[in-house]
Length: 385
Image (tube, rainbow, N blue to C red):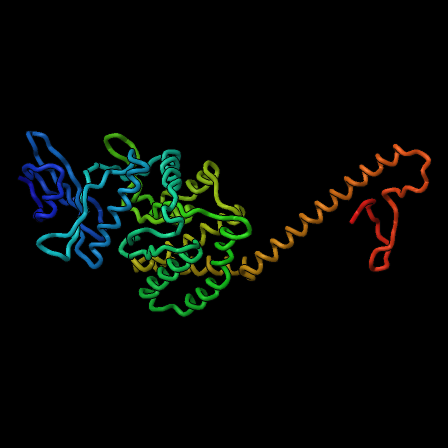
């Protein structure tokens, strides 16, 4: 019998879908916040393979439950790409430890073709929130950090809360960078409402849709046996679907902006569409802050983060007022264009009418000049109000 140091807790044994002889337990997978094992159980000369994560850290219970609930939901939507979860629970022998149990799948670290992945991700994004709100029914984890999934009425509220939390998470490692602190205040005053509130105002709206939440190349691989896509380690909640592109703006990821552009072309994006790239840049900042908080060696991205924040502040210096003013200008221009069109149309109609009444000098032509209310002369349409 080839076994590792793991002893199957009674709670794990009870959760297994088959009962038989444990013939092998071995460490498996690159897991940062848990320990992964492959378990082989023999039943009537047939081997059954399972994968289990052991979580021995703070929030172990919520980590296991969040993954189970996320994977259960996604398996309903894209069963061809999701290994069905079996169970999660706490150890009977040590109530500080939790486990997540699923079926074993041998994976290739290459990510699947973009076409295949877009089909899968767009299916996930079609799932709408059962409450009509932004959030999730349990906490989920972005790496080791809990996401506050408390239900919100607006995406701006949900994302602002998450971005603030990510900045605070990074600041603990950065030892409270004063420049970043000042930038963040201006950023939340100007840029965040400027880019997010137009999604849900002015006749526009977005539906809270399921997002994978941690979509990057390490979590999107290929089954070695079937060569089908395999997705895992999600951080699900109901949010703005464009949020799933947060890990695709940097060269440090192999799943990159080529995927984003193809998704935009094949599936589409939210309105205002012309601000899509800036919204993705905003979402990418959240990922960068979180990366710095998890991995101190990545504090090197701080200069890039500050540069992006400054770029967006410079681009939107008037915040939401700038959007309102721009919308008013566009509406006024549209009004003037429509008014001019109506005026020119009426000129043609009245000119046509004048040709049908010959010799009547008392009927004013469409080019009559009459005094305006200000006393100046102005062209006026016949029958105008």
